[in-house]
Length: 194
Image (cartoon, rainbow, N blue to C red):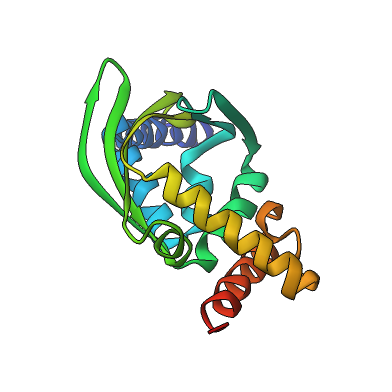
């Protein structure tokens, strides 16, 4: 019996695609694993890794301030460049997955936060998903965050910069890499004023 080469080729392609599909199922990550990768990407300021974890857009919500902001992937990558200027350290203190969401307790310290509060911030948040892509990160509550000290030090820095280095005025609101560099320069100038 002679087998038609075209039919044989189609059968082989069909078998290979079934195997690929099975491999993809095995490779599918849990939401917990995706969230862990997200925090690792934050800690490493890894924009390329971050883009593989996010949906087309992501909502960042601060419940304490009733504030939320929607970022495109590109917009979030720009924010990540700003954040990277301050050399952040993110740590997962607790993390678990339940009912298709991940809850986590996170610690963060960087040069900006150390200047403003002199200690790491610690908060609880929920990470939400759509098709195994992160669509929302909701900061529920702060466990460690001295808001009064943060605002006092920030306001003193802004006032001093506006008076002594007006070329850096507005550094607070420019969340780009260039804005982060200005912010860091403002902190250094303020610390060296004595």
